[in-house]
Length: 316
Image 1 (cartoon, helix red, strand yellow):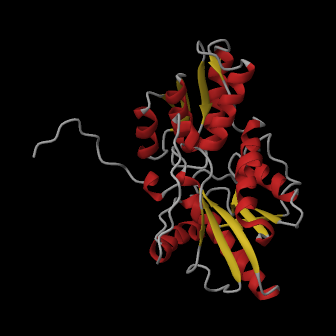
Image 2: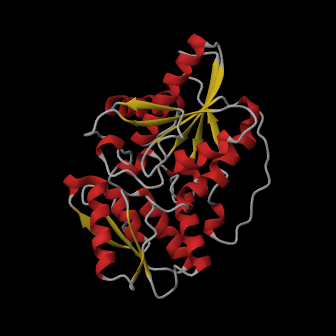
Image 3: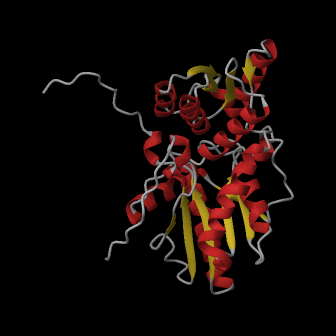
């Protein structure tokens, strides 16, 4: 294999590394659909390690620009983890204080990573999931409205705009008219909403599929079963061309498969995205004999493990 040399970028700040993530062709997990190309956008290549760097950066910079976020205010929001890491990293880079409300049962890795940036954590009832964190953060802000800037990732238009101007544009730049289908899971729904709006404006028709957990009680952290959840105000049910249910087992199994077959270690929401992409590819291969499906790797699998303790001193 011949190595290709690319000019390295020089960055003025860590936030300049957000976006322009690579697309990876999945060769082995899609062998059941050999006539269809399957690509996954590696959003864990963002500096905060997840797709949430994009909306967090856009929400913060838009709020700074119009005066809603000022140095005397604390940014507070609810999160299941990845958006919190993104807020924490960007807050540290730009000099803003961050507080996060998250379910107490989110992974230890996400708790430790956010705290490493100096973020204060407030825990909600683990049995109430992301909806419980939403209710608690609203209560905190209502009690001290002048103390906080509450971006509310579930209703903030800057969330999908980050994907409209970023993710969707990058996919079209890389694949152009080859892309026929796009699929990603529903959490805040920002990735789906923003990317779909941009892809629907393309000169060639792109079929956009929203993947969601098949059951109300599921194990796909970060994804929402819309029928049983607080529906995010940014979610437009008329925008996806199709809704595809994905079981917890399919998401977890695909996370294992892509690690073993592709050398790609991703989280379970990413596993669900790839499982949906493979189902679409199999249908395209069977019915149309070709196509090009794109999905998103939201984060890395190591974010779901308890990390080693950070040691300040070593004894050799």
